Image (tube, rainbow, N blue to C red; front, side, top):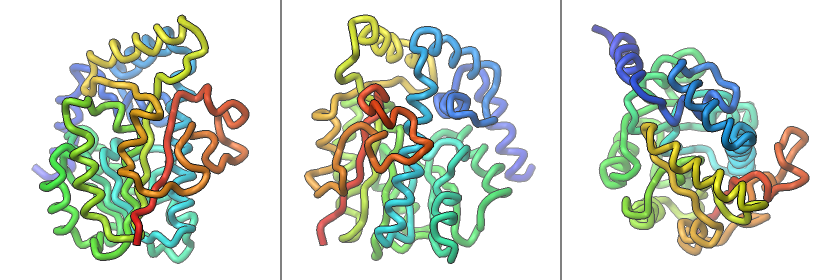
Amino acid sequence: MNSRDDALQAIEASLDRPSAARVYDYFIGGNTHYAVDREFAEKVRNRLPLIGDYCRTSRQFLGRAVRRCVREGIRQFVDLGSGLPTTGNVHEVADDERPDHDVRVLYLDNEAVALAHSEILLADTADPDRHQALAADLLRPGDLWERVLDSDVIDAGQPIALIVNAVLHFIQDDQDPDGMLATYREQLAPGSLLVLSQMTNENPVDDEERQALADLVEYYKSTTNPAVLRTVTEFERFFGGWPMLEPGLGYAPAFHPDAATVFADSPSESRVIGGIARKPR
């Protein structure tokens, strides 16, 4: 059996419950999802009607952040918990920003279904010399970074943009996200950039929205990835005190918005926070 057959088997075996990665793909308008994912997604949307816009906000932030990193001179990216290749992949955005096509991207995810989809979909859009997807668990930073070092894609001695986008709200505090991110920050070369975002429950407009966000966390307990929401203060610590690139840490739509940015006129309604920090030289 070849790797593509293995990938298809992994996908088939994952269809007994919703995949958070495929649900996210559904919300942002991708096409890599199944009935079990769509049914769950619509249940969530019925309780939190703007959830699709929140997910689009996360994906748009990723694209604008990648462009900013490329403009800052970054030529290699490591995307942790990358999920499914879908609309606005890191390597596609980077290549669009750099016509020289000299940017290298390594995707890492621990979900077999995400890796399976990556192996199938990257074959159609990626340059295998510069773009790879590997299986690794970001909660095991030592093992994961060994995989990064063993790859022929990334030079760890040069600045890297390390991305953890729309993932930290699936990592509970008792899973030690602080220690995990401290390890990754330590591994990065000076001048590297850290790109982080997650959903927040800060400043709900009323008690109804506060309860809807709590219900969202409850719903995700039935998926492959239970969720946790954090305030800006709770989230800021993940940057390790590194200086932030302008405009600093805040609601994602306020980060260099463009004409397509959802919630550009009301960033605090997006329920997504994020930013980019630079490792001091």
